[in-house]
Length: 358
Image (tube, rainbow, N blue to C red):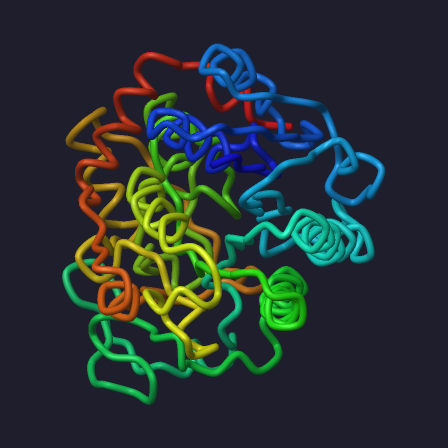
């Protein structure tokens, strides 16, 4: 198959591209290098035989060159939950990139009669409802103390409310999901939507508002300043993490099942959306991550900032049981394996934070 990947030089895009090439697929892709450090991934992509052209998903003319496609994998986005409101990215720019960029890719799918795999996010779920989940502190981490609605100990399910507010970033991705499903239905091509949790692994460009596992481990290794923000300064807030190799395993299954009428894939519209995450077994709080870092790299002081940060949440863990049921998929890499991989990368690349600081 010939697969086009937008944002191919980003962390997730590049790892998927390399994995798809190892699986025997023809891969092409584009990137505008808006993410600091992403240009460093280009040499290994080209060495693996990935066809590359510089381009921006917001501009239709940059997509005209891509032909004879079987699938389009939408991995281009501004991934920060603060985007559009932090003064660094304009709100219009965010929507043009995350929403209108997806529309441009869907037009490519329509033209080429190609399928679409959209990488979405756990940030489509309602902030107010997530904040209202009953949590208690235990062993240095927030945990749910009872089942609540569409969420249980295994995490937030796809039925969890997506009502506003969810952030401009989350809204851009939620709208992209709906538009993608409508395009697939109207023009007869397959669409799969993968709501990903926190992606993590070696080579990720970590920042405080994204790539938190990579950012924390690299910062600890470099003895750079760190701080617990909000939630009483305890570091009890929890996220789960997912390695790109596990996402790749699902993508390969989705590519294989093919078109709308095969009968070998889900027919219900809601089954086209799945959570893709490490789940409860890969969940870790910042305090627990600090304990891991301390064992690996020695002690390091973490400051406390009691002021809340916009869109921060105490506990977000995704339940991927729908993906397991529909796709026979489960993540294989544990959070400790992922942390160890990032730790090795931190030791080998002590200047990594400067590379990705732009």
